[in-house]
Image 1: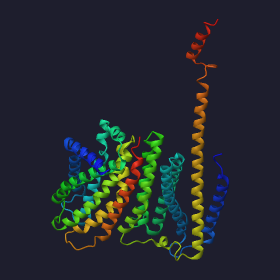
Image 2 (image 1 turned 180 degrees about the vertical axis):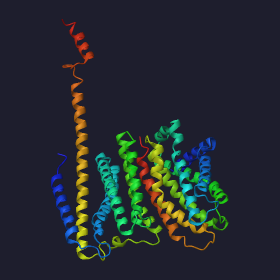
Image 3 (image 1 turned 90 degrees about the horizontal axis):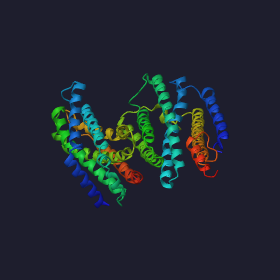
Image 4 (image 1 turned 60 degrees about the horizontal axis):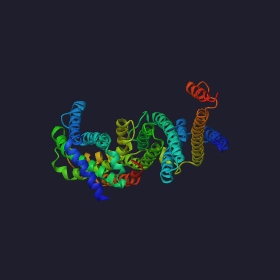
Length: 253
Length: 224
């Protein structure tokens, strides 16, 4: 009942990912001055866009939670941030590999997109200690939502500030997205974005499903335990209950 | 709303005047960090980028102290229940806390900036003072808004000492970029007129976003 729609979504993701990878390796031409390594662009950039989109979506879900008071929106927001952090880690790793291959360094401080992404990533990592050091579930949901909103507003501000700080920028392929990117490269890029976005949504849905199922399991288990304990009819190995029953049985006999 | 805010602010200032907890600690901390930078960088005088970076990083680190102490009195003495039970708008609580933090930061800068000029700065502060005051005032507004928000977010968590610096410092990166870049030309040996416009715009934008955001979400913190 929780996994509704998960199967078609997974199938669509597998098809799109396979198509995207096939296009990356067999359809899109090698970049003229970067060669084969430029193909990491079709994974790295869509992942970065999807991860940032996930952070923004989490902020919108958090707003929804605060407005309606429905805690399921907080769960959605939490899972979205969780997935975006996983994607963000992949973005930092692939970005680092790309930087090493095309600029010769693992880390390039004057690349504003990379630096902004690191700051955003560091900020969102604090979501976990914040969320899990609050015990009261209502308060946990509310505080996490406030964090998600504040951090969501911080993302564009931070990108603007870091870009201003770098007088000279060399975004290379990045500035060309959709611009003067050749037709077959652009098509491959859009298919990749679609595939990665579908992957994100599938993973988000899967995690959400598992979280809900385990919460439901916990509820059922508690109900089962509560259901057995209170009625004194069949006390299984409970000495006080046995004593109580024999005490109540004595006057009758 | 303003009147309740002023009342809470006066209470906070009275506590600070009697306990002298936050401001002297911040000032002492900033001077200590200057000494650390002197040895860490092995330089007697600084100018330009290095000077403005050291000054700003020190100010931000000192802010962490004030932010983690911002709700300390309420928490330790149990006054927070009284404050939350009182039929007042949460916005006035935010305004009071942010104003208290703003005043602490002003006092800190009154000590830290001259101390920096005396201990580490090569070129001397004289000529750059009006611009520097403007930049610091704009930055303090942002610091106060973000600081009050983070203090309230962290107030109810178990890992408070951990959450405050981890949450506050990344949030302050845009402010650091704008502040340090705007201050840098003022602290050069050969001062030259530089256009501060875009950094002041960025600082104002940061202030605006975080003041509005904090006012909007503060209602959801410190409930019940």
